[in-house]
Structure formats: C-alpha cells, structure tokens
Image (cartoon, rainbow, N blue to C red; front, side, top):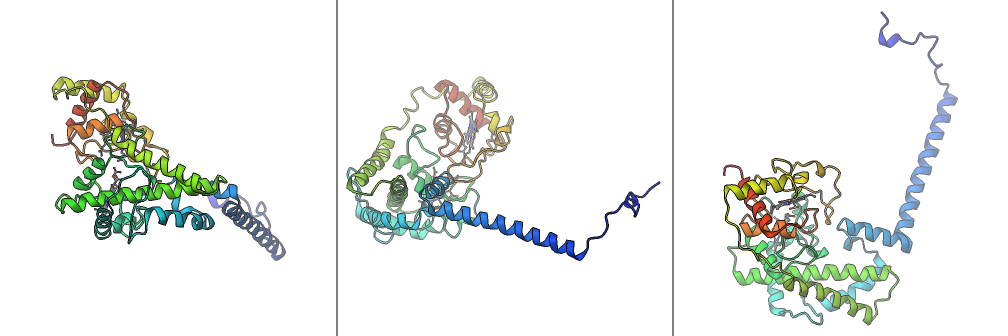
Length: 353
Ligand code: HEC
Ligand code: HEC
C-alpha cells in the first residue's frame, strides 16, 4: 500500500522554484498587496471627506448608536456653539428650549449626583461609554439616541419621567444597573432631570448635524424647527402613556396559565425568539441585526425571574403591550385578556416556582 506522503512519485513533483521565480512571486504579491491597501486608504479618505461619504459614515454610525462621536469636525464646530447656548456645559447645565420647563437648581443638583454615581458607567455626555462600561454586558445605556427600553408608553413614544425614575429607583435586575432607592429622593428626582437633559442634548446634536449634512444652514429657522420637534417628542411621552390596564387584570389560575402557554407557542409567536422553554434560545436569534445601540440582541431568559423591566404583573404586562424599545421585542397586537394570560404564564416560568 502506498503511503499518503508518496502519492506523487518524485517525477510528478513540480520542479523547485528558481530564485528568479521566487522574486517574481514576491514582487507580484507586494504589488497586489500595495494596490489593495491603497484602494482601502482611498475608500476611507473618500468616505471621510466627501459630503456623500460623510453622510454615509454618520448614518451608518447612527444605526450602530455611534452617530454623535462620528460627526465630522467641521460640522461639530458649527453645532457646538448652538448646543452650549441651549444646554450649557457639563459643569453648568441648563435647558433653554421654548416650551420646555426646566428647574435650573435641580438640574445642577442632578449633574453633581450624576458625576458621583452614574458617570463612570454612562459617560460624561451620556454616551454609555464611561471607564467601567467596557467590562459590562449589557452595556450601560447611551442616552443620546433618546431611546429607553422599559417604558409605559406606546411603542413609538419616548419614556416618561416616571419610567426613568422607576429604573433609577429599582435598578435593572440581572444587569449592572444598580438601584438608587436608598439615596435621597430629591437627588434621584434631580438625576432623572439630568438624564433627560443629556438625552435631549444628544438627540439635538445629532439632529443639527444631520441638517448640516443634508445641506441646510443652521440658521434660526432650522434650529427652531429642531427645537420644536425635540420638545414635542418629550412632551408627547407623558400623554402617550398606555391606557393600561383598561381590563382588570385577570387573576392567575391554571386555566389562564394554560391559555398563556398556548399563546406563547402559537399566535404570539414568542417561541421564535424566547425558545420553547422561554430560555431565550429561539431560532430567530441567529443572525439578527444588533439593537439600535449596536449591541447584540439577546432575548430575555424568561425562566430567571430577574426581569430588567421588573417582575410585577404590571411590568410584564407593559413589556408585552409596548415591547422593549430599541430591540426587536415587539409590542403585542392581542387583546388585553390574552396579554394577561401571557403575563401569568410567563411569571409561572420562574424556576423554583
Ligand atoms: C455599574 C454601572 C452603572 C451605573 C453606576 C449606573 N448605570 Fe444605569 N445602566 C447600566 C446598564 C448596564 C444599563 C443597561 C441595561 C440594559 O441595556 O438592559 C443601564 C441603563 C440605564 C437606563 C436606561 C433604562 C431603559 O429603560 O433603557 C437609565 C435611565 C439609567 N441606566 C440611569 C442611570 C442613572 C441615573 C445612574 C446614576 C444615578 C446610573 N444609571 C448608574 C449601568 C449602570
Ligand atoms: C423578535 C424577537 C422576539 C419576540 C418575537 C418576542 N420577544 Fe420578548 N424579548 C426579545 C428581546 C430581544 C428581549 C430583551 C430586550 C433587552 O432587554 O435587551 C425580550 C424581552 C422580553 C421580556 C422582558 C424581560 C425583562 O427583562 O424585563 C418579556 C416579558 C418578553 N420578552 C416576553 C415576550 C412575549 C410574551 C412574547 C410573545 C408575545 C415575546 N416576548 C416575543 C425578543 C423577542
């Protein structure tokens, strides 16, 4: 039997390369490599410097939650003074927007509390990229997109003050977001003002940069237009709280749980992401785009009981009703009775119950 290594008789083997051939291959290799690198550098240059390219970079980064850090230097130079005029500086924050009430002293107090307790995770500008952030999964929230996951509002609306207050008081179980319920309540109320300040500031910065890249000048009309949109969005949050619950919660029962289980597998299609046992390992998870902050999607493990948005029946109801913003977790299109059945089923999944 022939050994694998001797499949070719010596006569079949290609002749060894001469040094001239070596030189030829090496030169060709370096030439090709140089052309590839050169094209890469050129592409980066074009993308970075042409107006179309800049827009591309900005839009790409917005999708991945990094828009603000990617604003080109010349646009930033034009946006910065307007931002400072409207929002002050981190040391002396203010909100100067028509139609938005803000308490200057409380904002200052919130900023001070933020620096001591939140900044190392959430960053100076609220970009979610403080020095501790890189060690955490999930990452601290980047406020600048104006999107918050756990709200009581309909799926297209922003968070209310109460939603943010709830998060800061309760923390987010199963993540590194701590609870601040033992702190002075006035401080916690003030820091919520400051979170809204950073969030508005980030959104405004992005909106103005987009206007510049769309070819507009940042004249007074344009700035006022953007102010109006911004204020409208935040003011609307309060009025778009879900009308929950219209139907009195159906008390939990074996029948309700059984109906919930059926919905979970059937019409609700929850198993596609959360998996048949609710552990967050459904088939749809593969290849999903990242969430709006650019982080990988991880459907909740519903058997753990430490829900980020809270485990009270009303918390779970809101998740099913409004979804989890910024992620593919959808808001429900079922009747309220069906949603309550799901609430009871999901709460029954907690291991050890
Ligand atoms: C140890 C790090 C850490 C500290 C300190 C911290 N957070 Fe967080 N925070 C997080 C993480 C992580 C998340 C995101 C969890 C997620 O995406 O599910 C988060 C999320 C949030 C959210 C978003 C809630 C939502 O619905 O999207 C708010 C608001 C928030 N934090 C406010 C604060 C405030 C205010 C402070 C200080 C008083 C603070 N955080 C301190 C880590 C931290
Ligand atoms: C397209 C995928 C997808 C589908 C379908 C889906 N979910 Fe989710 N779900 C998620 C993701 C992703 C999260 C986690 C969001 C986060 O915290 O980052 C989540 C979170 C949740 C939470 C919140 C847990 C917490 O930590 O507070 C509940 C409750 C939940 N889902 C229930 C359901 C129910 C009930 C259904 C069916 C009606 C469903 N989900 C359908 C993706 C999905």
